[in-house]
Length: 405
Image 1 (tube, helix red, strand yellow):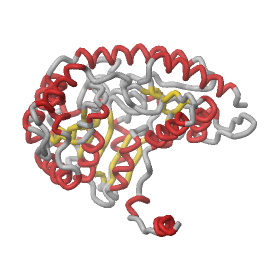
Image 2 (cartoon, rainbow, N blue to C red):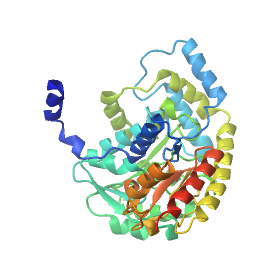
Image 3 (cartoon, helix red, strand yellow):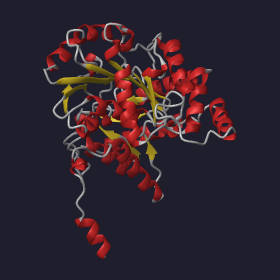
Image 4 (spheres, rainbow, N blue to C red):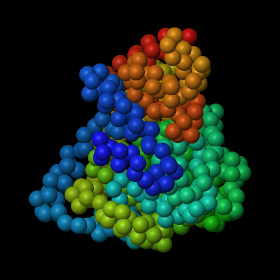
C-alpha cells in the first residue's frame, strides 16, 4: 500500500501531458483484454498485414545469425543496407541518392520522430492535411511545434489542394507532412497533383516536405509517384519509408529516411542518443528484401485489392454509412456521423469514439475512432485481416448498427 501511495504522488515530466496515447494501440489493447476473457473479437483496428514474412527474407536473417552478426551496428545502419535503400529508390522510383543521404531506424515511426525532432522548434508550424496517421500530430506536440490542419473530404479524394496548402502557410511554417498512399483514407496523390503542390512549395524555400511512403507497394490505381522526383524541391524532401507494410515485416522494425545530407546527419545525431543502430539481423534481412524479388509484395497487394472490393460491397450495403473507395493502403475510412445521436436504448452514440466502443462491446469488432486521425466524422477499419474474418466482422457490424434508433 505504501509503495502505491508513493507512485500515485510521484511527479512525472510535463512532456507526458503534451501528447496522447496512440488510439490504434489503445483499441488493440482493449481488444486483447476482451479476447483474454474468452470473447471472440475480430480485429479491424491495427494496420498489420496478416501475412508472414517471405521465406527468402527469413532465410537471410537465419544466415546473419549463423554468420554472427550479433554486435552493435552503426547508428545510420550497415553500409550495405544503406546501399540497398539507394538501389531500391533508383529501381522503383528513379531517384538518385547516396548512402550518406540514408538513415535507417527501428521502423518508420522512429524515422518520423527523428525528422520532426531535427526540424521543428518550439512555435514552428507543421501543416498536415486531414485525415492523417495518429502519430503525426503527437510528434509535433512532443517537439513543441504547432499543428496546422488542412481539412479535406471525400469529394476531393481526401487530398489537399494547392490552394488549401498556400492558404495555410505563414511565416512560421516549417514543415508540410503527408502520406501517399494515405493512412487512414487510402488516398493516393497522382503525379499531376504532386506537381501542383510543388508549384506552391517553390515559392517558399524554407518549408521542408516530409513525405511518408510506407504504403508505396499497396497501391490500387497505378504506379507510385514520389514528390522527391521533382528536382526543384528534392533537397527539401524527407522521404520516410520502411519494410513493415510492403514486406510483412512489422515486428522486425526497420524504417529509413532519404534526405539532404544535413538533415540525414541531424537525424543520425538524434538517433545516436535514443536507440543507436537498429537490429543487426533485421538489417541483413532488409538488404535481401530491398534488392531481390518483389513478387511476394505484389501478391499481397493483389490479395488486399480483392479484400478491398469485398469490404466496399459489405460497407456500402449498410444504411447511413458513406465510404470513399481507397486507392491504396489497406483501410477504409467511412463517414459514420449519421449514427451520432442514435441509441440502442441503453447508450447514445455521440461521436466516433462512442461508435468505435459500441462496436467493440456489442459487435466485438475493433476499429479506430476518426478523431485520432483529425476527422471526427469517420472511423477507420482495416482490411488487412483475412477474408473470412472481414466478412464475419461486417455481418456483426451491420447487426449492431441495426439496433440503433
